[in-house]
Length: 108
Image (cartoon, rainbow, N blue to C red; front, top):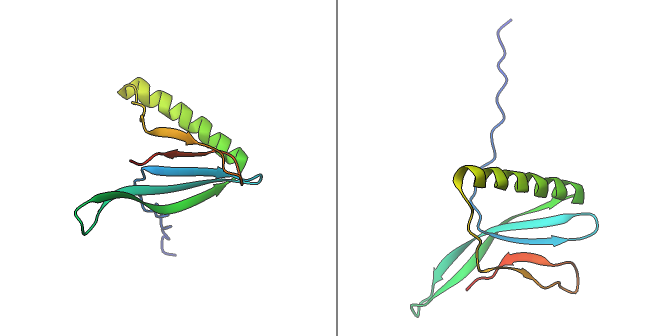
């Protein structure tokens, strides 16, 4: 009998993101991720636009585990590489009438 080799699972494609919108409903928390780009206009001006790439819907328990894992990873990162500067344009946007606050960087 010939040796059978199991194919290794392929990793999903990697995509850098720079923008997030986080919303929640009782059963799940949605994290929408995108990338901002400068878009030229015919009149010579530039506008920042966000291309939304993916929305993750996760349970509140998984979101809490993710938050804890990110906190731990950031602490270890800063111990090794130094303090991460805070983005002065980041702000917690006010709650919408249909849900809790959203987190997003304000685009200028």
